[in-house]
Image (tube, rainbow, N blue to C red; front, side):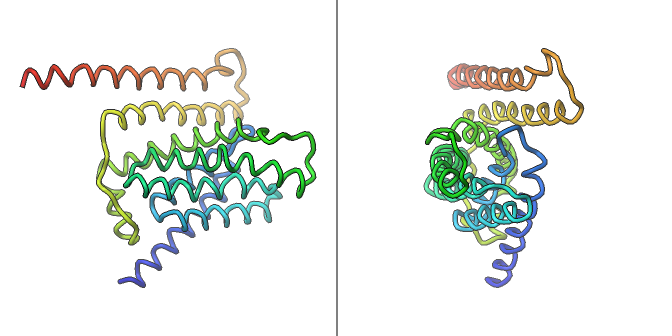
Length: 243
């Protein structure tokens, strides 16, 4: 049984690595690689921090060798991948903390570490310590939001715990709440953002509407999430009184 689970872990890891190599350069927004962060978080939740670290490292190395990507393929992935798994386990299975681990690890630590690597080893000039922080944080927010929606759906129907059990990974009870539902609504804005940006690029859609539609989607979903949360919180006390 132990050998079977280890084999399944390696197969899952291999699939995530292959998926990461393929979708990272395709589903990307200018200056950001949100799907790499999506893979980091999913791997961290499915398999844990060490497997996620290995996954991010191998994806980065493959992209550097085959696509000529600079070393930020590693610095912009490995720290977030590991912290995502650590935060997820430290929080006893809260997906939001897995996303926060990716944001902090990649958006801040990875972005700062990219400066000396790109300056001293890659010879890129005109950079500062915080040069990569804005784009890295935006990328992790988008990729993290997509991962959050994906994993929350799996968690809410019980599939996440089953997958973790099959892989022999640590599993936790679902933490569905009004806040998690509101965050899921808000996260849909990030998915729409990526879809609209990619569609605009592929079909060369221009104009005031298309130039701002992706950002409008973020705002609309964020407002919808806030309204949902407020309405649910207002209804809860009335429901308790009526019962």
